[in-house]
Length: 69
Image (tube, rainbow, N blue to C red; front, side):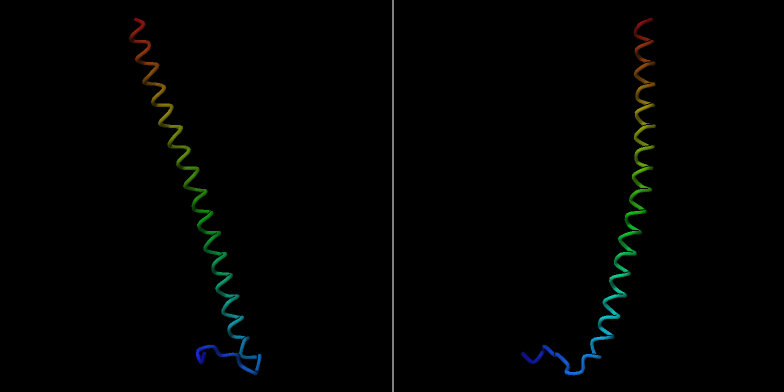
């Protein structure tokens, strides 16, 4: 198992810990960004859905009025 390397000098772990911390922070930032964008898209989708339903109801009401006359 020559590919595993555990240095005697533990200060060699500092750059790896720094890189891990940096990647972890970047992961949280990307997750937060996706969540924020998703929330905006959700609001837009709800607005579009409500608009479509209002238009559909207007058309139904219009047809009902025409049928009643």
